[in-house]
Length: 232
Length: 338
Image (tube, rainbow over all chains, first blue to last red; front, side, top):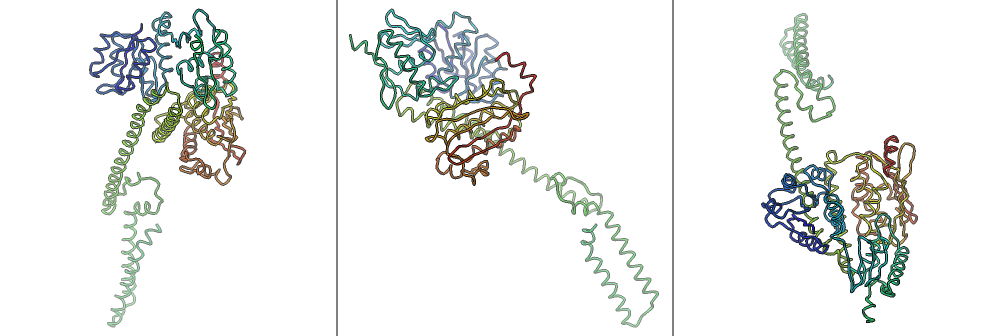
């Protein structure tokens, strides 16, 4: 289990990051006294540090230099400043990457994973393999597989994204807008394409014997229903 | 010279009147010696003339400067020579210059403090926005969606404020390098995906991967952001497509954003690049600040890109940014990696 140290002076962001990272199987350490960042760093020996730039007393650049004298662990800056100069400053002070506020969990997680992978080799991504489970239906996001009891189906990336959204929101409705947003990465996705993917996801679920698990809610979106439980 | 003559005209007139007066008084007293009078007149005129010549020669620099149009404040520091009046004038000018510079510095400092304050404030506001953003990430009801929309608006507004504040210090804050147009457009589109989805407008990207241009990616992204925001806003409900394309024209590469929305009335087209101008469309759509296109023009001007615009009411608007392509040799070398 990788340990991630969060150095962020805003308590809410700190707490939100912490709970999100713990949800994905990371151990987190945070700092309460900002003059003792190094003490925490040395005693916790984290595998990766998330470091805010604007901190009371000394700024993140200072702490980054201090940490660099002790360790080569990946350090990611989190800052509201998005100018090129600030990013260059961060990298020159020994950081490995830079995340600008406001950020998405997905981005933070992706960057953490890629840094861990780069620093500690390929065994690392196994932990923090994201899985979502709803009443026995299990989605493996790295492998892009969906399993129910001992049956398995492979998914495409977009299908996995759709299922992730539906399963995370279970039992609530996921709006079409939200799904479109999730699917949009390189290329935009229009309404018709979304319909196509929904049909494919339904097909995959049918392969697992879960016909009708994705319900259309008129005028708002889609909802996952655990019909297999109702039936039992 | 002409200023000198105008300046000394009263003295010359006064001198002549006095001379005639003296001769008349002597004449009325009965004293009349023609040759002596001619001699006196000649002698007086000679000394008066000599005085004027010396006067002109010693104060020439002042007259010359006063009759020349002022070109810069620095002229106040020029010296004029050794005559008492010249020295007094020099000192006085220098004093003015110093005072003026002091005040200017005070204002510059104030302005800089203010800009710094604005930038810091905007950055501080990003923390609460991040918190709201994170809190909403797992929520998906209509209230959350509505809050997300408003947060996006705040973000957009803050971004604009930040860039306006930065514009003052543009010279220290840009970096020209090869920018891959397709890559940049895709990033900007991804940032704006909620805007597109919410307005049910979809982007159509027709950009060849090869296009690289000389520009600053951050500023150019901001420009594109403004153009896309406008395109989507004025398409909403009328058309569901915005086309972004790049193509070459001579030695330039054009980045074009075309919408099929409401268009701009011809009487407004010339003025849309003025600050605070919102025009007829601005009155119909509440979110217009009149700053978007002004900033586009300003930024493009500073990056040495030009902006072209065509629009027809009911048909749509096309905006083009004329960029210079990266030298082909570099381009070829970079192609394999993509």
